[in-house]
Image 1: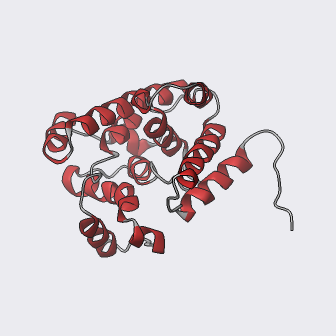
Image 2 (image 1 turned 45 degrees about the vertical axis):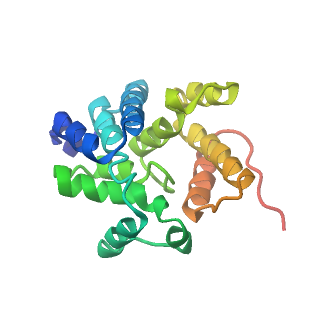
Length: 206
């Protein structure tokens, strides 16, 4: 637990009121489920559950910003913008949500801001709190029920890095099946998490 995490104060009702005016009701319910799952996973892994809950609550602030607004805010803050981001600006919503958390709710906790920014694509080297929110966003109960999802949820309770790797694999397979663009950061996140996970690693063959 970081010292800054213990001092971070967030008015939850203020955030909920903001979300009510900027995010549709079904997405608000998703956010609340992510908040709850992030808190539970943090407790399971001996992290600060309050900090995890706050990051979960803030993670989708910019989810429904129009593409031009996402690009404008990202450019103004000098965020890294790839060709994939330009083609699909929605992929910037996680990084921009961290900017909104700072501006609208004066969030200064570096762990919370990183977890918000990393919740969609992950990031190589991301901290455990970021892993928790990344997994909560992908695996919360509203995402459906299947043996694969249930197995990932169980794995997330015991091994965050292996769960991140396998969750990335699931997302990448979905993107390939639906002929969607793949952000290079998710591939880098997957490879990083795989290297931290137990078991044999298949090296690329020349």
